[in-house]
Length: 310
Image 1 (cartoon, rainbow, N blue to C red):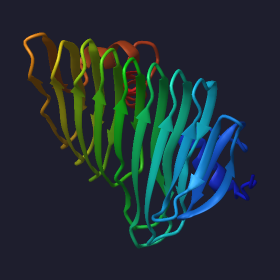
Image 2: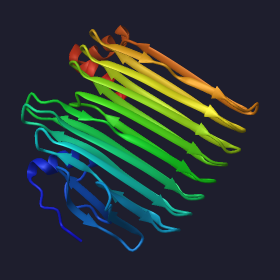
Image 3: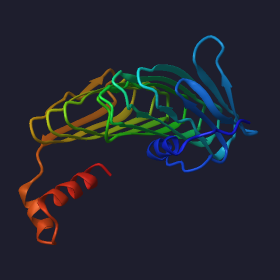
Image 4: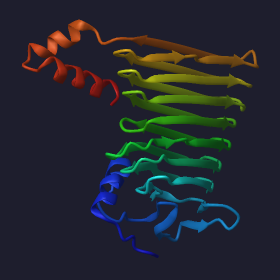
């Protein structure tokens, strides 16, 4: 076990991305500027550094219940390009919470970038809740770039709930998510995104329902402000008797641009797939209603956006 030696600025980032104000209980792996900053294992969860490339292997024993794992990453050096490969091996009949995410503080003029490649192997009848938050800050002119990739393989009866959030400070992001769901399994993905200034965001998903009675749901909510640009490509494929639903809702403001291109692909006559997509601005009557309660127009707008992205 290694206790992390963190500054106040480091803990500020960790609070933003993982709601950590002190060293977490249970298993954790904290990465700072491309290096291990702290790690702890438990009797049920073991974290091992890879020997062939940067990253870690996480092994969760069969039957592990009501345990948590924190694996946040922070970058505080300008000009750093951090690439990491994390593989999760979740045993059978488990129930675990995993909190990840990356925070970048860039006070310089060079680009700081983190690319996280995560692969999950989830055993039969296991349940995983995975939370990933991205955040950027810093007074420097250097860009803050985050490019996450998440691949998930759900065995029979397995369940994963993924919640990904990116609210402020990330200049560019390209996200790719792929989930394969075996018989009786279920994947629920909730994505929340806010871009502003000249930021760009691309999110691409492939949810493949390959086993009988597999289920999948994608909920994407985003706000694009100023001159920012967003593009969404969620694709749901049904290869057996299954049910899938894709929902994309976006609020557009200023001179922003949004593309939402949901796709459903049926490869079996018993596949039931639905998609919805909506892009629009904030309704004027919503703002007026809140202003009658004493809020300014700016405060009313902020409240609406906060509720939309909750």
